[in-house]
Length: 489
Image 1: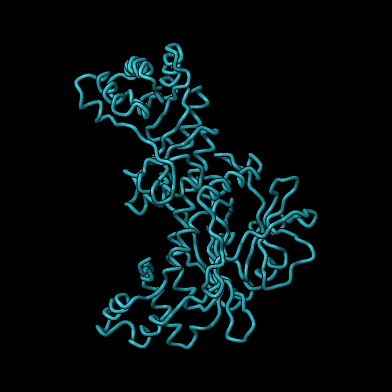
Image 2: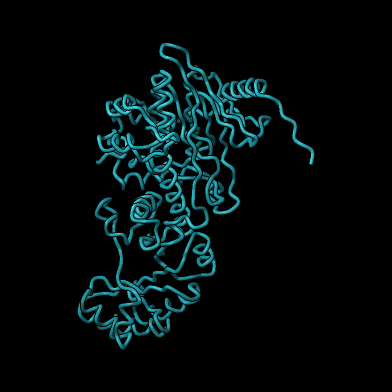
């Protein structure tokens, strides 16, 4: 792919220059990418975006035109922001990092490292912005899709948000991530070509409106595409449109073809779908599917199903591809350990007035424990220390809450090798396999964790030794920091 090393924030480059200028570029560092809260008020998220991360990393280099652009950037004094020797250094740079990641389609939770980067600090710093960009949006959309598909209860969900997406790149990313999350197909033809996602679509209101008569519009379409007939019936009067679609379906059957179904795009979808189902069944078309659209999301779909709606296929666009009720995941990328060449690892922790923003130190991994085939708890632990004799989990929000996972003999570590010394060592799975992984992963968790609202909180915590080391780092850092007293009101 073309060079995309400049897909970054300027402050990553200014820090990189500082590392290089101070002789610290080759200090080894470990960074972790994680999010702090589950999106949409739910109980989990679906990891997604690793495929795009790999593509970007494999093309990571500063091309001559990148360096020429950077050479033209001025500092506040009007002189070049970067000296030429640093730009030459960037031009020679090749990735040397080790990168570990949680595979796409894995169920994940707050504070767990989705990606771990270990290598020269200058390189780990330069990767931050792009990794966040690629993982945040993908994970957000895959999670939204999983929730929508869960609400649909096994009915196929069609993603058709291209026209409402945040630009062409956003549309393609959303189509792929929605498929990872469980959507059966997309209306986005380029996404179908690029990723192998099944594509679906028939006609819009404009087709019907271009004719003087609605039934003539259906008949003409049936003659043109007899093997793709889903008639949009709500242009004028929905139930009248259903009756006209039935008339055309009868003539279509006489010619040796079957109507696929009808689509409802407005009105009371629960009531209209039930009435349409009666009409179709009475006319001898019990297999004709009722497709519904119209600003759907997981809660609307769940409500329609609870009301007895007779919808078989759900078309979801705007509120899926734009993550309508939560436009950002809020993932972060934090330094967790550093060492000089030949030295020992020094853990690092970021403090905050908000407990949720205090970072975890060390070289982290996540061990997931299982009982009778069900996931029962995740422990974040530090690989720079020996594995503990007993796996005691400490709740980071309440250290008095602890549980011993040692009795669970079945476990797996979630991070897997992706890059070693900059080279790809990961077998990239097919998209269909990633989608299947999502469904298999969701099945590992108690239904309460998957509830759309007020979900059960799945146990995730720090390994007891890591918790103690983190607490000691916090105490030491706060002891060093100057104490401030709030001003009186």
